[in-house]
Image (cartoon, rainbow, N blue to C red; front, side, top):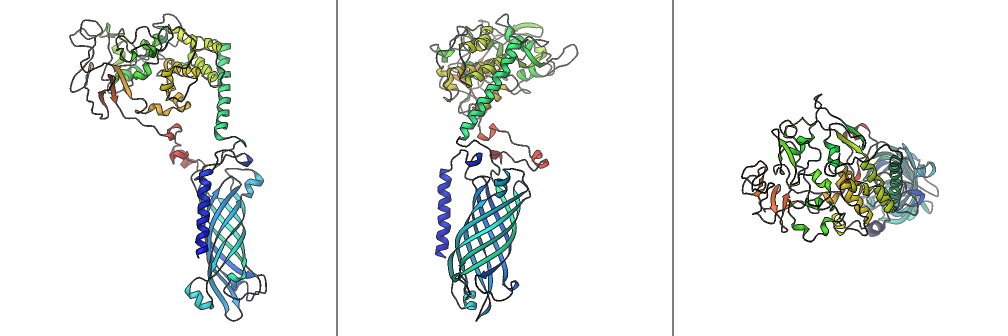
Length: 604
């Protein structure tokens, strides 16, 4: 039995070493090797077996039949090849000249090389219903090891190495389960038998039936021999980028679309507040009508402290808006302490058309007035207005009264798609820049300076995962131009594998700079709020948050305001990210309807 234990230990050690060195690259025949814990099977079976010698066998065949049971653990390295560790045992029966019919228990542990003949001969198919799996192996057998068998057979424990050969028939029941019929033979020296046999070898034959359960990843991904998974992904990304560039360029060349231009202070936002779709730029969208009472709730969504999601831009994002000279705002000395009233000066015109600025006006009760960020809604001070109508009757008093058109796909996005594809392909240059990014910045009153180096602020923004100047500027532009448009930012972050940007650790919900808790501001210069009363437009006060005030707690409690060391307001809202979120889970209802579907690995 010591030899048996040593064999098991050796197999376990070999398995452990293999687990550490498994390459994540295509193996032979063009399939990617899965992880160590993928493509495992557990098998349990039972049936009947018999023992023979290569000499004269006494008694009938039926008298030598007895039971067998087995337990196996299989690891498939490839759709065609695998290894199995199986423990089988039961009873053998044969005849002795002195004892007559004799029975003895046995255990046989063996490691088998498994060949999926069906996948080898017929090609890999995930939906195959039957698999023929021949195997061959080697192991150690112990027999006649119980006290009772010692007494009955007048002999002690017998041990020996043995070889096995067989054919496993696998019938697919579900993606997880197989029904198996296993036909197997073994050969060992006759000394493993406690009875005298006329021959040098003992032959054992068995037929068992059982079930297999497969766990973790069960299928295989086709690859290209000699290339890693990363290589293949990079190639696929390049193909996708080339196709995206071609599709975008076709629209750019054939028209009829172009950017809506005009007054830099209003042209951009007019796309989102106009009654009808501005089809010069809008390729696809939806129109509404005040006259026909066809309304939506978008404005209410951004202005209601109870109905909406309290969406607000972060200071980190607002810093990405360039100056009108085309230079980074973050190149200005002391930019960190430029307050809300001054930070819109000399900036990209889209900034004041995306969030409330010190000069923003709204019609309140029929009268146009300056309007400051509503702190019951904004949480950071950067209150979105891109989709909102500048009339409180359409924003607050009636939650379904917005009638402005909603663009879904714009020509601006086509330009950005082309720019991103060319940048990712390494084909971005000044000519592509002039066709794409330059046009968008010019519309916003920004000098479209061709970047000569990567902006360190943008490198840090994307957690130092990108250093290419073109890619960074494309990402800056997508964030600004497509801000709050139909989930595009989420799609960008998923495509760029930047889910970590969504965490409160990497991107806290940081707001405007106020310096200290004694800070107040007003828009009129008369120390009154935008409604003309003596209350400042913003101030700190203890207790409950109001439209014009917040309560600083600095407790770190979730959903409270604090003041960081730099003097910025921070909305303490804890956010985390998990790798599995890059791929959405398959609904259980879909899996129930279609058993061939398998849940995405990280969602199991």
